[in-house]
Image 1 (tube, rainbow, N blue to C red):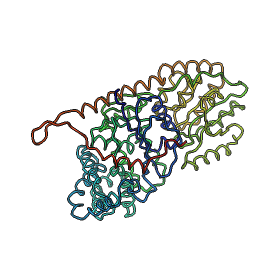
Image 2: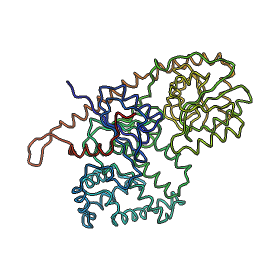
Image 3: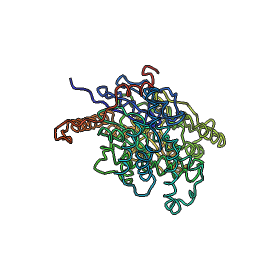
Image 4: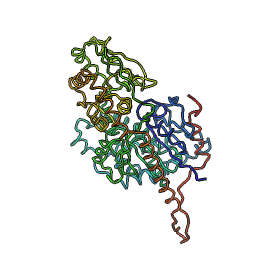
Length: 538
Protein backbone atom coordinates (compact mmCIF):
# COMPACT_ATOMS: atom_id res chain seq x y z
CA UNK A 1 0.00 0.00 0.00
CA UNK A 2 1.40 3.37 -1.02
CA UNK A 3 2.41 5.73 1.75
CA UNK A 4 -0.05 8.65 1.99
CA UNK A 5 1.13 12.09 1.00
CA UNK A 6 2.11 14.21 4.00
CA UNK A 7 1.46 17.95 3.96
CA UNK A 8 2.61 20.58 6.44
CA UNK A 9 0.03 23.36 6.29
CA UNK A 10 1.12 26.71 7.73
CA UNK A 11 -1.24 29.49 8.74
CA UNK A 12 -1.04 32.91 10.37
CA UNK A 13 -3.73 34.14 12.72
CA UNK A 14 -6.35 31.85 11.20
CA UNK A 15 -6.99 28.09 11.34
CA UNK A 16 -7.63 26.43 13.70
CA UNK A 17 -7.60 29.13 16.38
CA UNK A 18 -9.70 31.83 14.68
CA UNK A 19 -12.81 31.78 12.52
CA UNK A 20 -13.08 33.35 9.10
CA UNK A 21 -12.87 32.68 5.39
CA UNK A 22 -9.30 31.36 5.37
CA UNK A 23 -10.07 29.08 8.32
CA UNK A 24 -13.16 27.76 6.54
CA UNK A 25 -11.03 27.05 3.47
CA UNK A 26 -8.41 25.18 5.55
CA UNK A 27 -10.99 23.10 7.39
CA UNK A 28 -12.90 22.12 4.25
CA UNK A 29 -9.74 21.34 2.28
CA UNK A 30 -8.41 19.01 4.98
CA UNK A 31 -11.75 17.25 5.54
CA UNK A 32 -12.28 16.68 1.84
CA UNK A 33 -8.85 15.05 1.43
CA UNK A 34 -8.99 12.21 4.01
CA UNK A 35 -6.20 10.25 2.31
CA UNK A 36 -3.72 13.09 2.89
CA UNK A 37 -1.90 13.31 6.24
CA UNK A 38 -1.75 16.89 7.46
CA UNK A 39 0.29 18.61 10.12
CA UNK A 40 -0.65 22.14 11.11
CA UNK A 41 1.75 24.89 12.12
CA UNK A 42 -0.16 28.03 13.05
CA UNK A 43 1.54 31.32 13.78
CA UNK A 44 -0.44 33.20 16.41
CA UNK A 45 0.00 36.35 18.45
CA UNK A 46 0.03 34.82 21.92
CA UNK A 47 0.20 31.42 23.64
CA UNK A 48 -2.61 29.58 25.33
CA UNK A 49 -5.17 29.67 22.52
CA UNK A 50 -7.75 26.92 22.15
CA UNK A 51 -8.83 25.61 18.73
CA UNK A 52 -12.12 26.95 17.44
CA UNK A 53 -12.51 23.94 15.18
CA UNK A 54 -12.72 20.22 15.91
CA UNK A 55 -9.79 18.98 13.89
CA UNK A 56 -10.30 16.24 11.28
CA UNK A 57 -8.82 12.81 12.00
CA UNK A 58 -6.25 13.17 9.21
CA UNK A 59 -4.57 16.03 11.12
CA UNK A 60 -1.71 14.20 12.85
CA UNK A 61 -0.25 17.15 14.74
CA UNK A 62 -1.32 20.72 15.37
CA UNK A 63 1.16 23.24 16.74
CA UNK A 64 0.74 26.89 17.62
CA UNK A 65 3.82 29.07 17.20
CA UNK A 66 3.20 32.20 19.32
CA UNK A 67 5.34 35.07 18.11
CA UNK A 68 4.49 37.22 21.13
CA UNK A 69 3.57 36.72 24.75
CA UNK A 70 6.54 34.50 25.63
CA UNK A 71 9.77 35.25 27.45
CA UNK A 72 11.76 33.78 24.60
CA UNK A 73 11.94 31.09 21.97
CA UNK A 74 13.20 28.53 24.50
CA UNK A 75 9.73 28.43 26.03
CA UNK A 76 8.62 26.75 22.79
CA UNK A 77 11.33 24.08 22.84
CA UNK A 78 10.74 21.67 25.69
CA UNK A 79 12.85 19.03 23.92
CA UNK A 80 15.98 21.02 24.76
CA UNK A 81 17.15 19.73 28.11
CA UNK A 82 19.18 21.69 30.62
CA UNK A 83 22.49 20.28 29.41
CA UNK A 84 21.87 21.02 25.76
CA UNK A 85 20.60 24.51 26.54
CA UNK A 86 23.74 25.12 28.59
CA UNK A 87 25.88 24.02 25.62
CA UNK A 88 23.92 26.22 23.23
CA UNK A 89 24.40 29.20 25.51
CA UNK A 90 27.98 28.59 26.55
CA UNK A 91 29.01 28.26 22.91
CA UNK A 92 28.15 31.90 22.28
CA UNK A 93 31.11 34.24 22.65
CA UNK A 94 32.57 37.23 20.84
CA UNK A 95 34.71 35.02 18.61
CA UNK A 96 31.82 32.80 17.49
CA UNK A 97 29.57 35.79 16.93
CA UNK A 98 32.20 37.45 14.73
CA UNK A 99 33.17 34.35 12.78
CA UNK A 100 29.83 32.56 12.34
CA UNK A 101 27.02 35.08 12.87
CA UNK A 102 28.10 38.54 11.77
CA UNK A 103 28.34 37.93 8.02
CA UNK A 104 25.05 36.04 7.48
CA UNK A 105 23.16 38.44 9.75
CA UNK A 106 24.48 41.40 7.75
CA UNK A 107 23.49 39.62 4.53
CA UNK A 108 20.02 39.03 5.93
CA UNK A 109 19.52 42.65 6.95
CA UNK A 110 20.75 43.95 3.61
CA UNK A 111 18.39 41.62 1.81
CA UNK A 112 15.44 42.67 3.94
CA UNK A 113 16.02 46.42 4.00
CA UNK A 114 17.82 47.58 0.86
CA UNK A 115 16.02 48.60 -2.33
CA UNK A 116 17.32 45.91 -4.67
CA UNK A 117 17.95 42.69 -2.77
CA UNK A 118 20.14 39.87 -3.95
CA UNK A 119 17.79 36.94 -3.36
CA UNK A 120 20.58 34.40 -3.72
CA UNK A 121 22.44 36.02 -0.83
CA UNK A 122 19.23 36.43 1.17
CA UNK A 123 18.46 32.72 0.84
CA UNK A 124 22.04 31.80 1.69
CA UNK A 125 21.89 34.00 4.79
CA UNK A 126 18.71 32.27 5.94
CA UNK A 127 20.22 28.83 5.35
CA UNK A 128 23.35 29.65 7.37
CA UNK A 129 21.39 31.24 10.21
CA UNK A 130 19.01 28.28 10.48
CA UNK A 131 21.98 25.97 10.98
CA UNK A 132 23.65 28.44 13.34
CA UNK A 133 20.56 28.45 15.58
CA UNK A 134 20.55 24.65 15.65
CA UNK A 135 23.74 24.94 17.73
CA UNK A 136 23.38 28.30 19.46
CA UNK A 137 20.71 29.79 21.68
CA UNK A 138 18.52 32.16 19.63
CA UNK A 139 17.53 34.31 22.61
CA UNK A 140 21.08 34.84 23.82
CA UNK A 141 22.31 35.63 20.31
CA UNK A 142 19.76 38.43 19.95
CA UNK A 143 20.81 39.83 23.33
CA UNK A 144 24.50 39.88 22.37
CA UNK A 145 25.99 43.40 21.91
CA UNK A 146 27.24 42.54 18.41
CA UNK A 147 23.68 41.85 17.21
CA UNK A 148 22.67 45.34 18.27
CA UNK A 149 25.74 46.91 16.66
CA UNK A 150 25.15 45.14 13.35
CA UNK A 151 21.49 46.11 13.31
CA UNK A 152 22.11 49.74 14.27
CA UNK A 153 24.83 50.07 11.62
CA UNK A 154 22.54 48.61 8.95
CA UNK A 155 19.90 51.22 9.79
CA UNK A 156 22.59 53.87 9.35
CA UNK A 157 23.56 52.31 6.00
CA UNK A 158 20.04 52.70 4.61
CA UNK A 159 19.83 56.36 5.65
CA UNK A 160 20.01 57.54 1.98
CA UNK A 161 16.93 55.41 1.20
CA UNK A 162 15.06 56.80 4.17
CA UNK A 163 16.05 60.41 3.51
CA UNK A 164 15.06 60.23 -0.17
CA UNK A 165 12.03 57.94 -0.14
CA UNK A 166 10.72 58.15 3.44
CA UNK A 167 11.90 61.50 4.84
CA UNK A 168 9.25 61.41 7.55
CA UNK A 169 10.93 58.25 8.93
CA UNK A 170 14.40 59.81 9.26
CA UNK A 171 16.10 60.01 11.65
CA UNK A 172 14.64 57.22 13.77
CA UNK A 173 14.87 57.59 17.52
CA UNK A 174 16.83 55.13 19.63
CA UNK A 175 13.56 53.64 20.86
CA UNK A 176 12.44 53.22 17.22
CA UNK A 177 15.53 51.17 16.36
CA UNK A 178 15.18 49.07 19.52
CA UNK A 179 11.53 48.39 18.67
CA UNK A 180 12.47 47.40 15.10
CA UNK A 181 15.03 44.88 16.35
CA UNK A 182 12.46 43.52 18.79
CA UNK A 183 10.01 43.02 15.90
CA UNK A 184 12.64 41.23 13.85
CA UNK A 185 13.53 38.97 16.79
CA UNK A 186 9.88 37.90 17.05
CA UNK A 187 9.30 37.51 13.32
CA UNK A 188 12.36 35.31 12.81
CA UNK A 189 11.29 32.82 15.48
CA UNK A 190 10.83 30.06 12.82
CA UNK A 191 14.59 30.13 12.19
CA UNK A 192 15.16 28.68 15.66
CA UNK A 193 12.54 25.91 15.58
CA UNK A 194 12.70 22.59 13.72
CA UNK A 195 10.31 22.42 10.77
CA UNK A 196 8.43 19.10 10.60
CA UNK A 197 9.38 17.10 7.54
CA UNK A 198 6.68 16.43 4.98
CA UNK A 199 6.28 15.71 1.29
CA UNK A 200 5.36 19.34 0.77
CA UNK A 201 4.56 22.53 2.64
CA UNK A 202 1.30 24.35 1.88
CA UNK A 203 1.41 27.96 3.09
CA UNK A 204 -1.95 29.69 3.39
CA UNK A 205 -0.47 33.17 2.90
CA UNK A 206 2.71 34.85 1.74
CA UNK A 207 4.92 36.47 4.36
CA UNK A 208 5.37 35.07 7.85
CA UNK A 209 3.38 31.87 7.42
CA UNK A 210 5.47 30.91 4.40
CA UNK A 211 8.73 31.26 6.35
CA UNK A 212 8.66 27.65 7.67
CA UNK A 213 8.11 26.49 4.09
CA UNK A 214 11.05 28.57 2.88
CA UNK A 215 13.23 27.03 5.59
CA UNK A 216 12.04 23.51 4.71
CA UNK A 217 12.92 24.08 1.08
CA UNK A 218 16.35 25.50 1.91
CA UNK A 219 17.12 22.66 4.35
CA UNK A 220 15.45 19.65 2.79
CA UNK A 221 14.40 20.63 -0.73
CA UNK A 222 10.75 20.33 0.30
CA UNK A 223 8.38 21.70 -2.38
CA UNK A 224 6.42 24.79 -1.37
CA UNK A 225 2.84 25.49 -2.44
CA UNK A 226 1.54 28.98 -1.70
CA UNK A 227 -2.14 29.86 -1.66
CA UNK A 228 -3.01 33.55 -1.42
CA UNK A 229 -6.55 34.39 -0.39
CA UNK A 230 -6.10 38.12 -0.15
CA UNK A 231 -2.98 39.94 -1.30
CA UNK A 232 -0.98 39.68 1.93
CA UNK A 233 1.21 42.73 1.38
CA UNK A 234 -1.69 44.94 0.34
CA UNK A 235 -3.79 43.97 3.34
CA UNK A 236 -0.90 44.48 5.77
CA UNK A 237 -0.21 47.95 4.37
CA UNK A 238 -3.90 48.86 4.59
CA UNK A 239 -3.93 47.74 8.22
CA UNK A 240 -0.78 49.61 9.23
CA UNK A 241 -1.90 52.76 7.44
CA UNK A 242 -4.67 53.27 9.98
CA UNK A 243 -2.56 52.30 13.00
CA UNK A 244 -0.99 54.94 15.23
CA UNK A 245 2.61 53.94 14.56
CA UNK A 246 5.77 55.99 14.28
CA UNK A 247 6.88 56.61 10.66
CA UNK A 248 10.07 54.57 10.99
CA UNK A 249 8.19 51.57 12.40
CA UNK A 250 5.71 51.78 9.51
CA UNK A 251 8.64 51.83 7.09
CA UNK A 252 10.28 48.86 8.80
CA UNK A 253 7.09 46.80 8.94
CA UNK A 254 6.31 47.52 5.30
CA UNK A 255 9.83 46.92 3.99
CA UNK A 256 10.42 43.61 5.80
CA UNK A 257 6.95 42.34 4.90
CA UNK A 258 7.44 43.34 1.26
CA UNK A 259 10.72 41.43 1.15
CA UNK A 260 9.28 38.32 2.82
CA UNK A 261 6.41 38.32 0.33
CA UNK A 262 8.84 38.59 -2.59
CA UNK A 263 10.90 35.77 -1.09
CA UNK A 264 7.75 33.66 -0.71
CA UNK A 265 7.04 34.07 -4.42
CA UNK A 266 10.69 33.38 -5.26
CA UNK A 267 10.74 30.12 -3.30
CA UNK A 268 7.28 28.75 -4.14
CA UNK A 269 7.11 25.93 -6.66
CA UNK A 270 3.46 26.73 -7.37
CA UNK A 271 1.53 29.87 -6.43
CA UNK A 272 -2.20 29.19 -6.30
CA UNK A 273 -4.15 32.42 -5.76
CA UNK A 274 -7.89 32.02 -5.29
CA UNK A 275 -8.65 34.72 -7.87
CA UNK A 276 -7.19 36.05 -11.10
CA UNK A 277 -7.13 39.50 -9.51
CA UNK A 278 -4.63 38.21 -6.94
CA UNK A 279 -2.53 36.75 -9.74
CA UNK A 280 -2.14 40.19 -11.32
CA UNK A 281 -0.89 41.59 -8.03
CA UNK A 282 1.52 38.68 -7.63
CA UNK A 283 2.97 39.28 -11.09
CA UNK A 284 3.33 42.97 -10.26
CA UNK A 285 5.27 42.02 -7.11
CA UNK A 286 7.67 39.82 -9.07
CA UNK A 287 6.12 36.34 -9.06
CA UNK A 288 7.01 34.13 -12.03
CA UNK A 289 3.89 33.95 -14.20
CA UNK A 290 4.78 30.36 -15.17
CA UNK A 291 4.31 29.26 -11.56
CA UNK A 292 0.97 30.99 -10.97
CA UNK A 293 -2.01 28.61 -11.20
CA UNK A 294 -5.22 30.08 -9.74
CA UNK A 295 -7.49 27.65 -7.88
CA UNK A 296 -10.87 29.15 -6.97
CA UNK A 297 -12.56 28.43 -3.66
CA UNK A 298 -15.24 25.76 -3.81
CA UNK A 299 -18.58 25.24 -2.07
CA UNK A 300 -20.71 22.13 -1.55
CA UNK A 301 -23.79 22.78 -3.72
CA UNK A 302 -25.80 20.23 -1.74
CA UNK A 303 -25.37 22.04 1.55
CA UNK A 304 -25.93 25.47 0.02
CA UNK A 305 -29.02 24.70 -2.03
CA UNK A 306 -31.73 27.00 -3.41
CA UNK A 307 -34.06 28.35 -0.72
CA UNK A 308 -37.49 29.97 -1.17
CA UNK A 309 -37.44 33.74 -1.01
CA UNK A 310 -38.81 35.20 2.26
CA UNK A 311 -42.06 37.13 2.49
CA UNK A 312 -42.03 40.21 0.25
CA UNK A 313 -43.60 42.47 2.88
CA UNK A 314 -40.16 43.28 4.32
CA UNK A 315 -37.45 43.67 1.64
CA UNK A 316 -34.41 42.23 3.39
CA UNK A 317 -30.65 42.43 2.91
CA UNK A 318 -28.28 39.96 4.57
CA UNK A 319 -24.60 40.46 5.39
CA UNK A 320 -22.43 37.57 6.66
CA UNK A 321 -18.84 37.92 7.83
CA UNK A 322 -16.66 39.13 10.67
CA UNK A 323 -16.95 42.63 12.11
CA UNK A 324 -13.66 44.03 10.87
CA UNK A 325 -12.44 47.31 9.32
CA UNK A 326 -11.56 45.46 6.09
CA UNK A 327 -15.23 44.46 5.79
CA UNK A 328 -16.23 48.15 6.06
CA UNK A 329 -19.49 47.56 7.87
CA UNK A 330 -19.71 51.29 8.63
CA UNK A 331 -20.15 52.14 4.94
CA UNK A 332 -22.95 49.57 4.70
CA UNK A 333 -24.67 51.11 7.73
CA UNK A 334 -24.42 54.55 6.16
CA UNK A 335 -25.83 53.17 2.90
CA UNK A 336 -28.82 51.82 4.80
CA UNK A 337 -29.81 55.32 5.86
CA UNK A 338 -30.31 56.14 2.15
CA UNK A 339 -31.99 52.82 1.35
CA UNK A 340 -34.50 53.42 4.14
CA UNK A 341 -35.53 56.74 2.61
CA UNK A 342 -36.44 54.95 -0.63
CA UNK A 343 -37.79 51.75 0.97
CA UNK A 344 -39.01 52.62 4.51
CA UNK A 345 -39.72 49.02 5.54
CA UNK A 346 -36.31 47.69 4.48
CA UNK A 347 -34.33 45.45 6.85
CA UNK A 348 -30.63 44.56 7.10
CA UNK A 349 -29.57 41.47 9.05
CA UNK A 350 -25.87 41.47 10.00
CA UNK A 351 -24.54 38.01 10.87
CA UNK A 352 -21.10 37.94 12.43
CA UNK A 353 -19.07 39.01 15.40
CA UNK A 354 -15.93 40.97 16.08
CA UNK A 355 -12.78 38.90 16.68
CA UNK A 356 -10.53 39.73 19.61
CA UNK A 357 -8.91 43.10 18.95
CA UNK A 358 -11.81 44.50 16.93
CA UNK A 359 -13.97 45.54 19.88
CA UNK A 360 -13.47 49.24 19.15
CA UNK A 361 -14.58 48.81 15.54
CA UNK A 362 -17.61 46.83 16.64
CA UNK A 363 -18.58 49.69 18.94
CA UNK A 364 -18.05 52.17 16.10
CA UNK A 365 -20.59 50.22 14.03
CA UNK A 366 -23.11 50.24 16.87
CA UNK A 367 -22.59 53.95 17.45
CA UNK A 368 -23.11 54.74 13.76
CA UNK A 369 -26.29 52.65 13.72
CA UNK A 370 -27.63 54.67 16.66
CA UNK A 371 -26.53 58.04 15.26
CA UNK A 372 -28.47 57.36 12.06
CA UNK A 373 -31.54 56.12 13.92
CA UNK A 374 -31.37 52.66 12.36
CA UNK A 375 -31.89 50.52 15.47
CA UNK A 376 -35.10 49.02 14.04
CA UNK A 377 -33.78 48.76 10.48
CA UNK A 378 -30.45 47.05 11.17
CA UNK A 379 -30.28 43.98 13.38
CA UNK A 380 -26.99 42.51 14.63
CA UNK A 381 -27.74 38.78 14.69
CA UNK A 382 -24.45 37.40 16.04
CA UNK A 383 -22.40 34.57 14.57
CA UNK A 384 -24.23 32.43 11.98
CA UNK A 385 -23.80 28.79 12.96
CA UNK A 386 -25.57 27.80 9.73
CA UNK A 387 -24.89 30.49 7.12
CA UNK A 388 -27.21 28.82 4.61
CA UNK A 389 -30.11 29.60 6.95
CA UNK A 390 -28.93 33.19 7.27
CA UNK A 391 -28.89 33.70 3.50
CA UNK A 392 -32.41 32.27 3.28
CA UNK A 393 -33.73 35.13 5.41
CA UNK A 394 -32.84 37.75 2.79
CA UNK A 395 -33.81 38.69 -0.73
CA UNK A 396 -30.32 40.04 -1.50
CA UNK A 397 -26.92 39.31 0.06
CA UNK A 398 -24.52 42.21 0.32
CA UNK A 399 -20.76 42.60 0.82
CA UNK A 400 -19.13 45.98 1.53
CA UNK A 401 -15.44 45.07 1.93
CA UNK A 402 -12.48 47.26 1.01
CA UNK A 403 -10.29 44.17 0.52
CA UNK A 404 -11.25 40.62 -0.41
CA UNK A 405 -9.95 37.51 -2.09
CA UNK A 406 -12.71 35.23 -3.37
CA UNK A 407 -15.33 35.69 -0.64
CA UNK A 408 -17.09 32.57 0.58
CA UNK A 409 -20.13 34.55 1.67
CA UNK A 410 -20.99 35.65 -1.88
CA UNK A 411 -20.37 32.21 -3.38
CA UNK A 412 -22.46 30.52 -0.69
CA UNK A 413 -25.27 33.03 -1.20
CA UNK A 414 -25.26 32.42 -4.94
CA UNK A 415 -25.51 28.66 -4.44
CA UNK A 416 -28.53 29.42 -2.23
CA UNK A 417 -30.11 31.27 -5.14
CA UNK A 418 -29.58 34.82 -3.92
CA UNK A 419 -28.53 37.80 -6.04
CA UNK A 420 -25.64 39.75 -4.56
CA UNK A 421 -24.26 43.26 -4.26
CA UNK A 422 -20.48 43.44 -3.82
CA UNK A 423 -17.63 45.91 -3.97
CA UNK A 424 -15.08 46.06 -6.77
CA UNK A 425 -12.21 44.54 -4.80
CA UNK A 426 -10.20 41.36 -5.24
CA UNK A 427 -12.04 38.55 -6.97
CA UNK A 428 -15.52 39.91 -6.21
CA UNK A 429 -16.31 40.82 -9.86
CA UNK A 430 -15.22 37.29 -10.87
CA UNK A 431 -17.68 35.85 -8.37
CA UNK A 432 -20.63 38.12 -9.12
CA UNK A 433 -20.57 37.92 -12.90
CA UNK A 434 -24.09 38.71 -14.15
CA UNK A 435 -25.75 37.54 -10.94
CA UNK A 436 -25.80 40.89 -9.19
CA UNK A 437 -24.24 44.33 -9.00
CA UNK A 438 -20.73 45.55 -8.23
CA UNK A 439 -20.01 49.03 -6.84
CA UNK A 440 -16.88 50.90 -5.83
CA UNK A 441 -15.68 50.36 -2.25
CA UNK A 442 -16.19 53.03 0.44
CA UNK A 443 -19.04 54.57 -1.61
CA UNK A 444 -22.17 54.41 0.54
CA UNK A 445 -24.26 56.21 -2.10
CA UNK A 446 -23.39 53.68 -4.83
CA UNK A 447 -23.99 50.84 -2.39
CA UNK A 448 -27.40 52.27 -1.51
CA UNK A 449 -28.37 52.72 -5.16
CA UNK A 450 -27.48 49.10 -5.98
CA UNK A 451 -29.47 47.77 -3.02
CA UNK A 452 -32.46 49.94 -3.92
CA UNK A 453 -32.33 48.76 -7.54
CA UNK A 454 -32.52 45.08 -6.58
CA UNK A 455 -34.97 45.40 -3.69
CA UNK A 456 -37.36 47.48 -5.78
CA UNK A 457 -38.06 44.48 -8.03
CA UNK A 458 -38.20 41.30 -5.97
CA UNK A 459 -39.47 39.28 -8.93
CA UNK A 460 -36.29 40.15 -10.79
CA UNK A 461 -34.34 39.14 -7.67
CA UNK A 462 -35.64 35.61 -8.11
CA UNK A 463 -34.49 35.56 -11.75
CA UNK A 464 -31.06 36.84 -10.72
CA UNK A 465 -30.93 34.25 -7.94
CA UNK A 466 -31.42 31.42 -10.44
CA UNK A 467 -28.70 32.92 -12.61
CA UNK A 468 -26.43 33.19 -9.55
CA UNK A 469 -26.68 29.48 -8.79
CA UNK A 470 -26.02 28.51 -12.41
CA UNK A 471 -22.89 30.69 -12.41
CA UNK A 472 -21.71 29.21 -9.09
CA UNK A 473 -22.27 25.64 -10.30
CA UNK A 474 -20.15 26.35 -13.35
CA UNK A 475 -17.22 28.00 -11.55
CA UNK A 476 -17.15 27.32 -7.81
CA UNK A 477 -18.02 23.74 -6.88
CA UNK A 478 -16.14 22.06 -4.07
CA UNK A 479 -15.25 19.08 -6.27
CA UNK A 480 -13.55 21.31 -8.80
CA UNK A 481 -11.49 22.96 -6.04
CA UNK A 482 -10.50 19.73 -4.28
CA UNK A 483 -9.58 17.97 -7.53
CA UNK A 484 -7.25 20.85 -8.41
CA UNK A 485 -5.47 20.70 -5.06
CA UNK A 486 -5.25 16.90 -5.14
CA UNK A 487 -3.57 17.07 -8.54
CA UNK A 488 -1.19 19.77 -7.30
CA UNK A 489 -0.28 17.76 -4.18
CA UNK A 490 0.45 14.70 -6.30
CA UNK A 491 2.66 16.70 -8.62
CA UNK A 492 4.69 18.29 -5.82
CA UNK A 493 5.00 15.08 -3.78
CA UNK A 494 6.35 13.28 -6.84
CA UNK A 495 8.79 16.16 -7.34
CA UNK A 496 10.01 15.77 -3.73
CA UNK A 497 10.55 12.03 -4.13
CA UNK A 498 12.48 12.46 -7.36
CA UNK A 499 14.81 14.94 -5.65
CA UNK A 500 15.26 12.62 -2.64
CA UNK A 501 16.26 9.70 -4.88
CA UNK A 502 18.58 11.67 -7.15
CA UNK A 503 22.07 10.10 -7.08
CA UNK A 504 25.03 12.34 -6.47
CA UNK A 505 28.76 11.84 -5.99
CA UNK A 506 30.52 12.53 -2.72
CA UNK A 507 34.01 13.96 -2.44
CA UNK A 508 35.48 10.44 -2.49
CA UNK A 509 33.93 9.71 -5.88
CA UNK A 510 31.37 7.17 -4.65
CA UNK A 511 27.71 7.37 -5.55
CA UNK A 512 25.21 7.98 -2.74
CA UNK A 513 21.58 8.95 -2.26
CA UNK A 514 20.88 12.62 -1.72
CA UNK A 515 19.22 12.92 1.67
CA UNK A 516 17.83 15.99 3.36
CA UNK A 517 19.04 16.94 6.82
CA UNK A 518 16.72 15.30 9.35
CA UNK A 519 16.14 16.54 12.86
CA UNK A 520 16.33 13.78 15.49
CA UNK A 521 12.91 12.28 16.13
CA UNK A 522 13.15 13.11 19.83
CA UNK A 523 13.72 16.78 19.06
CA UNK A 524 10.90 16.82 16.53
CA UNK A 525 8.45 15.26 18.97
CA UNK A 526 9.57 17.61 21.71
CA UNK A 527 8.63 20.65 19.69
CA UNK A 528 5.16 19.29 19.16
CA UNK A 529 4.88 18.27 22.81
CA UNK A 530 5.55 21.86 23.82
CA UNK A 531 3.41 23.52 21.17
CA UNK A 532 0.66 21.03 20.46
CA UNK A 533 -3.00 21.34 21.23
CA UNK A 534 -5.11 18.37 22.24
CA UNK A 535 -6.59 17.05 19.02
CA UNK A 536 -9.59 15.66 20.90
CA UNK A 537 -10.45 19.05 22.30
CA UNK A 538 -13.46 20.92 20.92
